[in-house]
Length: 569
Image 1 (cartoon, rainbow, N blue to C red):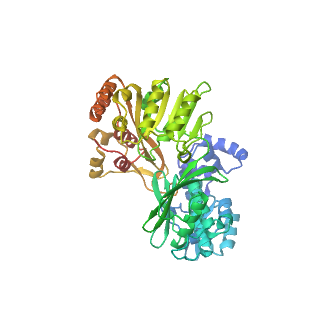
Image 2: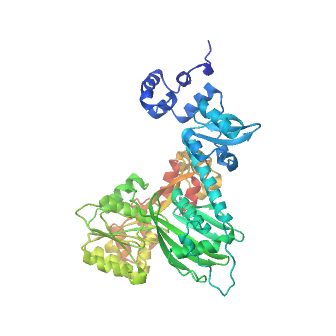
Image 3: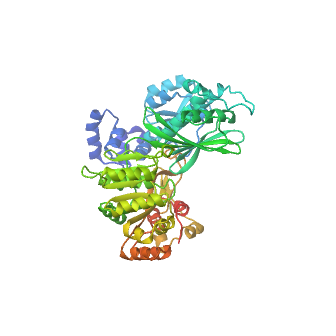
């Protein structure tokens, strides 16, 4: 007698498909009462089956189609909003599309007839169920109801918009009074922009004028994403409110201004660094969001290759010397240095940092924030630090000869110094120090390690797929025949989990130049960048490009990220 899944129990279907054996089903049957779950969810919780296997078994048993994830990338907000968000969350459902005389609704549990019946009454139409995995449903609800909330809130703000134009002789409209009125449209819009940025994990918010609209973009995982476009008429009000909140001159529209705002939300405290600059279309605001919460990174989570980790961990435990991390803005330099401090922090060590601004808070570390407007510059702060009996000093950035000179004096008097510098790679960091004005013999005797780094986006684990690179991509990435043979080329196809980008999170790539006897002699001789590079490569230095290819070969990142983030020598 042939097996008919439509007349079988779910456990039997799972066993028949080879997804799970009888012993595990028996164990799940015993435990499902304790868990208060159905057999499929119990097996899932125990880790005996995957969500995809459960969906396949439900599809065979109930006959319902499984939702195509490509459809979830572009749902109609009008259809999704037919089901109120609290109901969708509580009953694990989401409306997908209208079809004939009914509505197709994705369910995690289409056997729940009560929900089916109440949905039919709620929508006044026939319900056509489709199956969806619980994690996919969660991300779909999060994505689309956030868009619905954002759209409606922007529309609410625009609907109450009542600013009037002023002639050129008058000052820009002051909305300092409006900033105390929580219902003012511009206040609501700015609150929405900042709150959504914090929820999305954005590092920067751009509010810029275009010809017909204002464009709001968030920088997430190093890339800018457009999130909303309020009408251009709201732009002056938004700029004014940002100026009022950051205590800037609202009447000054011709010169750049910098300020900051301290915000407390229900989720976290955030320090917002504000930069306003005039453009041909009006003023543009860029806000950098600095999380005041606990520092959550460790050296192990940054992305070091095992052999590089051994070198770095050894050198940060030395009693004196300078360790410099180099790279462009936003390459994770501060994160690496704070992770290093967290690793070596103990009660017997006095660690002092001088930063502009303090990006991360570290328990047990004395952190000083420079304030140039009152004379608390890097050099002034560092002179006071010397009298604070430090063992380890972190200098936020070496910007000039004076700061570099103080850093070298610290290291030569028996202190371990961490700092950052803007340079393209490790060898050029050495020559940059000499260019600033430091004598080569001082650089050579004090420098212990130079580490260049970048951040690369990681392939989204939910939509990762095999990828066949083009001949041009292989050439641009500088891959050898051996690299091509060993590589597991991957690419994210885009899904609801990664907001259709194909990437989720970032990882570091590192280039470590240890200053050994040979490198020190080359620095004494004037610091020829090419000679230093050749010597370091001979000593086993892995370049940024090599580190990127290593991550690409393991399928962590893509060949396009390698081309974008590194240079082939």
